[in-house]
Structure formats: C-alpha cells, structure tokens
Length: 82
Image (cartoon, rainbow, N blue to C red; front, side):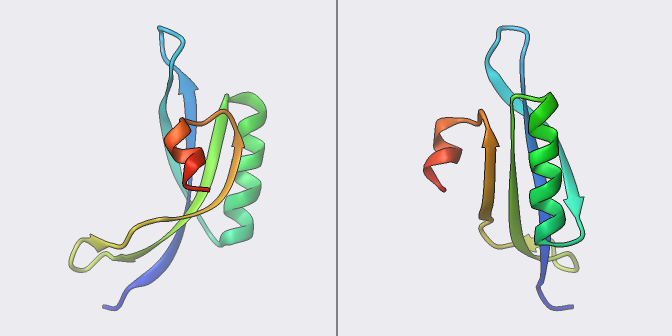
C-alpha cells in the first residue's frame, strides 16, 4: 500500500493546573472538513489545529505533519510551525 494523505484535528484543553494540554484528535474526510472541525472545536475549547499527514498504514510509517490551520490557544511551538 502506498502513502495516503490523511487529515486530522488536534484539540487542546486546559489541565487541572490551567496549562494547555493535548486533548482528543479526530480523523477528517478532507482539508475543508478538518479546518471546519478545528474551528468549531475552538469555540468550546481553548484551541485546535488542523493538519495533514502522509501515512502508510501497512508499514506503520508517517511523514512529518503539515499544519493547515490554527484556532485559539495552542502551544507556542505549534503556532511557530504555522
């Protein structure tokens, strides 16, 4: 199986100490779906990102993700990648 471009949303939440922390991630159908879902998630949560990644599930390999959109509060290092 060849590499396939996949689309994801990663949400960020506040932990018990009030720091940004990873929340759930979601697989999306396409780039527009990922951006819409990230934007919608950022209304109720501190922040979210949409990204794509080339994945080869057969061999368990993935290339570096490509950031598509940033909404709300996310870690500085994530925003710097934008």
